[in-house]
Image (cartoon, rainbow, N blue to C red; front, side):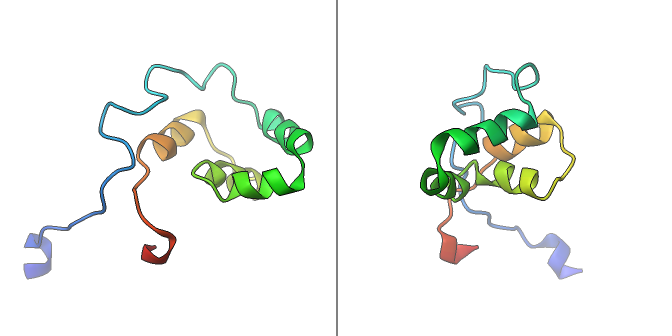
Length: 89
């Protein structure tokens, strides 16, 4: 019972609530999976691997897994990122 009352301490968010760079943009109108693969072909293997390890890499990995997702999930992933180091995960 005591575990339910314990306050959890989460890492800080990468962006403050309401202050994300994509706050006033919509991904619903221009987000197609085929565009992600076009980027892979255009930037080359080295840049693609670097992009895959960046904060938007989760979208790339979902595409590679052929995961069915909506732009609402993408928006949620990008706006609610936590500021953590890789060894903290």
